[in-house]
Image 1: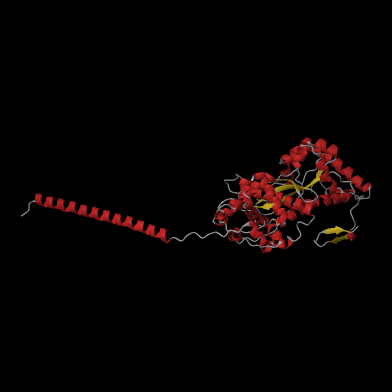
Image 2: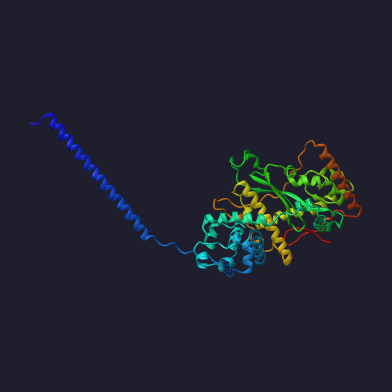
Length: 464
């Protein structure tokens, strides 16, 4: 018979043996599991297929496959204008950053660089970015140029930086430097319609509502103020153009609910014009705008409907007509801008800073195309209008494209003016009235409606 101590010893020995057995089993299982994992990992490495070689086309080869007309419709500019754009960007940012295709091809391991995910030539980066601005989708650009979808918008951001470093809006520099010759060159074409009477117009100003997504609280503290009276979130973009519809200045930081007059008053250009007001008045220079803006000595606006109705001599009506004939070019510039860059056909779904930069880049590229096509003596917008079918464009999220709101028919906001504002308004009214009287003296009245007709573009023109 076993006593209690023997039983206790036996149980301790059995328990120890069991623990050792369990530890051995656990160790064996861990070893087997580690060996199995290593085996699986090795088999995966051996069986893993090699990455597919990229077939990224060269820019030269891509250009050879499409016609001149196709190129112009796809990139909104001719081949020469595109080449000039690449040359300008490369000269400013440097070949090491731009990496033109000629430099990439001349380097070693050309096949690796072009076809296995290496360097992307600068021309292809420009082409990808312009297609995005023109309304193209990254879904189409990924197989077309054999780049990853994540790389598309990295390239766009790089391109935006290149353009902003290369091109500028010239009006502020002209005013700072008091370059009266340059301002006179801008004003001369505006004067042709009035036989030289309105000879001091240095630009037409208006506002453009650019649709954006609702800003986040992390971006601004008051997202609701970006909701404009047209019924959508927007940026109130202020811009000035010349008679050739090139943009001379733009200000993209205004909230959508901001009135045009307030938006312009908040800009640095307005402060600069106020400082230069005396010189501008002596030289006879001024801007022209619609009734949404305040009348000042450097910005002339039309007479109100009450003034025109109470004027039996039609002096005010004639002035409004010729002022509108100068101001209409900013509306046409906005129309061409939206027609050319399809990214503006839908809501801009970027952060606020990027939205502002995209609008500026679109305007700067618009100017580049205008300048180059003027040198080539060709119509820069003809042929692109057949792509202007926003109702047929459908975003990937189901959002249908639509034209932007480019007008602002809201009258100027009322309120008490400061002493300086009232003095500036009175001086502006004197300039406006002297021009109206001068038009009347020279028999420059509003043309009769019997001479009105529509041209091939649907624009109103007057015979004679």
